[in-house]
Image (tube, rainbow, N blue to C red):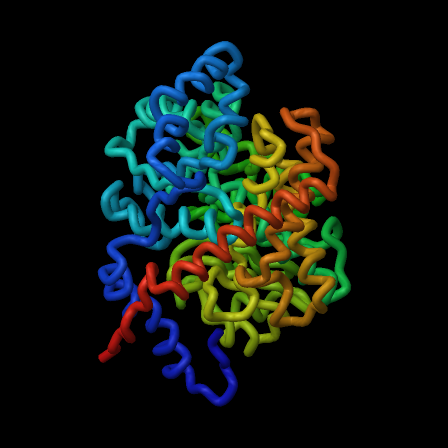
Amino acid sequence: MVSENNLTAEERIARTKLPGKKAPGMHAFYRGKVETALKCSINSFDDFSIWYTPGVAAPCREIQEDPAMAFEYTNKANAVAVVSDGSRVLGLGNIGPMACLPVMEGKALLFKYLGGVGAFPIVLDTQEPEEIIQAVKWMAPGFGGINLEDFSNPKCFYILDRLREELDIPVWHDDQQGTASITLAGVINALKLVGKNLDKVVYSVIGSGAANIAFVRILIRAGVPAGNIILVDSRGILHQGREDLEADKENNPYKWQYAVETNVEGRTGGTAEAIAETDVLIAASKPGPDTIKKEWLAAMNKDAIAFVMANPIPEIWPWEAREVGVRIVGTGRSDFPNQINNSLGFPGIFRGTLDVFAKTITDEMAIAAAYSIAKTAEDRGLNEKYIVPTMMETDVFINEAVAVGLKAIEQGIARRILTADELRAEAEAKILHAQAETKSLMQAGIIAQAPEIKID
C-alpha cells in the first residue's frame, strides 16, 4: 500500500503508475493467470475406468433420472462462468471480448484464491442482448452460477433481469450487485466513525451506470429513504423535471424511476450542486484526477465521507480530498487505504451461495454480505484509513459465506440446508484448500516465480 507520508504529489502519482508498467511483462511470463486442475486422485490405470468410461456411465444415468444429482456428482456446485462481451471494461470502455480476457482471467483468479470457487472466463463475440442471453442459457447446465462482467448500461440491467427469471441457478452482475455490496459495507463503517446514521444522512451519488444504480437500490433496501439520495448522470441531477429521462424510460426505466423517487429537495444543476451540503459522496463515474473538484468537496457537510471509485484513476486524488476537509476517503485501488472494490464481495458471496445450492442471489443476501464485511473490519478495529478489510484477510470471505448462506436458507431459496457451523466449516475448507494449493505449487516450483520486471 502506498504511504503518503513525506511524498510529493508527483511521487504519489508516479507510484500509482507502477502496477500498469509491470502488468504486461508479468502477464507475458505466465501467459495467463488460470488453468484447470484435477480434484480426484489418479493412482493407477484402473482409475481411468472409474473417472471415464465405462464407470462414468453410472452417475450419468442417475443425473438423467434426477438432474439435482449433478450437484453431487460433478463440479457444477463449485463452478461459475465469468461471462463478458467486453462492452464496458474498467476505465477502458468498449474494448471487445479478446481485449477483456485478461480481466476475466483476473476475476477467475480472485474467485479461486479468495473464495475457493472454480471460475471459468468466457468471452462472447457478440454484443446483442438476446444473443448473450441465449448463449448463457445454453452453457448454464454446466455451471452452478453465472457472473456477468463488464456489460454496458443499460443492457446490463435487461440481461441480468432476464437471466435471473429464466435460469434456476444464481446469475449475478458484479458491476451492479457486487459493487453495491462493498460500497454499502464501507458506508456502514465510515458512518460509525463519524457518528452519523445510515438513514439520516444525505447522499450524493455521481454517475448513473450499473454500479451506482444498483447501489441506490441496495441503499434503499437497507433502510435509507430514497429522498435522501441525489443521483447525477452526465447531464446533471436526476429529478422529476428531466424530460429526457421520461422520454427514454422504456429503454432505461431505472433512471426514470430514481428521477421520480430520489432527491426530495428537488435539486437541479450538475455535480457541484449535487455534492454541496451532503454527508456521503459515492462516485463511480469518469476517471480522474480532475473529474471532481476540491472546491466541490469543500462544500460538503462536516465530517464528510467520499468514495471516489473510478478506475484506473479516481475522480480526485485522495490526498486532495482530505486537504479540503473530507474525513474518510475510499477509492477502488488497492494501493490506497480503504479500497472499495467488489473483489471483497463476490468470492465470499458466491461461496455461501454455492454451498447451499441457492437458486438465485437476492438483494437481501447482498446486504447480509455487506454487514458481514463491515463487522469483520469493525472487530479488527476501525480507523479513518481502515473501514473495510483487505483481500488478504481471509476471514472476511468465510464470514460472508456464512451470512449469505444463512440468508438464502431463511428466504427459502436454498436447495441444501446447513447450520452456521456447517457453512463455516465448508467455506474454510474450500478457501484454505485453494490458498494452500497455490502456495504448495509455488514452493514446489510448479508455479514459477516471475523475474523482477524492470521499470524505466
